[in-house]
Each structure stands twice: as C-alpha cells, then as structure tokens.
Length: 405
Image 1 (cartoon, rainbow, N blue to C red):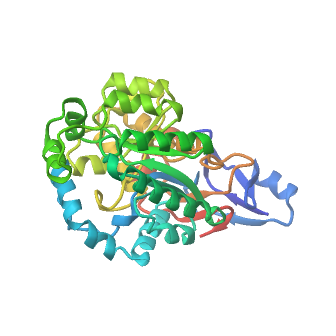
Image 2 (cartoon, one colour; image 1 turned 180 degrees about the horizontal axis):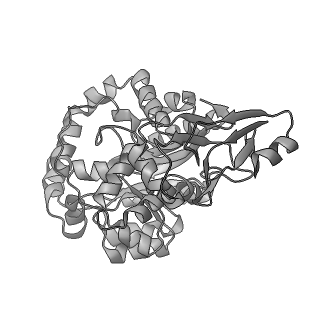
C-alpha cells in the first residue's frame, strides 16, 4: 500500500486541502494522513513539495499518432489547402512515422499528465506502439470510403484491424470504432459500424462539421469539397446530409470531434440524443475552421472534452498547451469558471463519456494520477484550475494503475 499526500487534492471537481490518498492498483482510501497511516501502518509514504496538487490522470480523447512526423510539411490557414497537402504528402509522412516517432508523441502526452488517450487509427500502424506505451489507449479503428464499389473491401479491412485491437486488451487497449466523417463514409458502411458498436458495446467516434467547406458540401453540394470530389471521385453528389448523419447516430452515443460549424439547434439535438463533443481549439485555429461555441455546450450541460488532435494540425500533443489555447480562445467566458470546466473536460467528463474507471480521485477508481506544483501558494481554492493551466508546462509525476511512470 502507498499513501500519497499533496497540499491540494482534486475531488468531486473541487479542491480539498491536506488530504491523503491510499492506493495500490486502485484507490483504497481517502482521509487525513494521520488516519491513513493508522489504517495502513506498513504503507509507503510519498510526500510532495510545497504548493503541490494531486489530479486524477488526464485524458486526451482524440489524437492521430500516424502523422506525428509532421512539423512544417503541411499547409495551415484553411481547411481545403491543408487537406490537399495531407493527400500530397500522406505517403511520405506515414512512411517516416516510425514506432520511435510515435512513442515520442506518447511520451509528450505523458509528460503533460495524460494517462489515457484516444488514438484514431486509419491504418493500424500505431497499434504496436499503443500496446507498449504505459498509457491506456482507446483505440479507434477508423472507417473511411464514400464509394459503394469499395465499401465491402474497406469494411473487411476495418474488421481485421478491429479484431487485431481486440487481441490487445491485455496491453491496455480498449477497442473502439471511428467513422471518419459524414462526407467520407458511405451511409451503408456508417450504418454497419453503428450497428456493430451497439451490438458489442464499443465506443464510437466521428469527425463532424469541422469546416465550412464540409457544411457547404453536405447541405448544398458546393464549395471546396465540390472540386475535391469531382477531381478524386468523379462525383458532384454528397453521400449524405447533416440531418441524415445525425439521425443515423441515434442508436449509439457518439463522441463527435470538432462540431465547429454545427448550429445551436444541431448541438441541442445531439445533446438530447446523448452525444458528446471533442473540442480541439488549436487544430481548429490552424485549419481556419472557426470557434466551437462551448458557451452553448456549457449552457445546455452538453458533455465535451478538450483534445489535442494530431501533429498534422498541431505543434504539440501537450494537453496543458491545449487548455491554455482554449482559455485564450473563449475570451467571452469568465476566466476562473472556464478554467474549472476545462479541467473537468480532461478528467471526469471523458471518463464518464467512455465509462472509464478513472478521471476521478474516488475509492475504487484506478490509481491514475498527475502531480503538479504551482510556483506559489494559490490565492484561493477556486483559482487553482486557472493557475494550473497558466503555470504548468509539465507535470511532476505520473502514476498509472498505482505505478509511477
């Protein structure tokens, strides 16, 4: 048994002072240090330095490891030029993205306190790395392909990758399904994936209304995607509409990434159906997609997470960098209140969305922790989330299932 004590401990989305936590692989007790040492006299005590904070391990719900080699290759500023640059450079970037490169990306997340992440996998090439990284991984096997002629072949390939991930559950892998987007997956394949997710209880994710170009294509069959589909697929017809795609998802709660171009009415509909949003502020800014109206989500109690996306549309995979970007992007929100919501968006909220036994410091939860230290004593307990986001570049220590990593 190990006992760990910080000056401040994040419990039930608030901070308690001078509380200790006893744990092995799971959290066994939460009490004063004196009481826990009486209860577990042979335990090992870990004390932290002054102004220390104990958080549950952070959760990054959406990252693409397969493009982790990108630094200056892809074009930023607008979605369609970026997409064209991805297609032009995809083979070289994926080929250069070795296991060492992807492991470095995992370690960067780890140094920012991420103990669980959602990996969106197009090809399955990062599965080996995800079995070796100390973090737990929700492994989203992605479906892509809008052409009916290739639907069966692509779905067969997807099933093979899904089954491979199922064989890795003993290595911290949680098998899951990702539908790339409404514009890029044929409705028949979308329905198959949704039915499979429902039948097997698998987590489901999808990119959704990321850009204005996507919205124009799905609603009016015009804009940047018109030329794209004419050039690559000889079609000027979208395979689905926004409403058709949203209604198809009604069977399974889905984690929808971006949703920047979703209307208030669409967000409210999705919320009523039990869906949630992954918010990637730096990716949205770099690709010129706009700003997700998280005030609408907060107002309507719609669950959302903050995520980094991949290095194809970001400069780091630090979840702390992402929180700082979100804090500055949503300038209309009261800063301390927003900071508190953002901390929830990488702890208890994603844990609840994906039914993870983590994200909270609570008896029976996995002993996944992130320790940080503030430079000075915080002005109040309520200010701790804000100062955490402003002043933390790397965490001091990370524990996963009770083991320091």
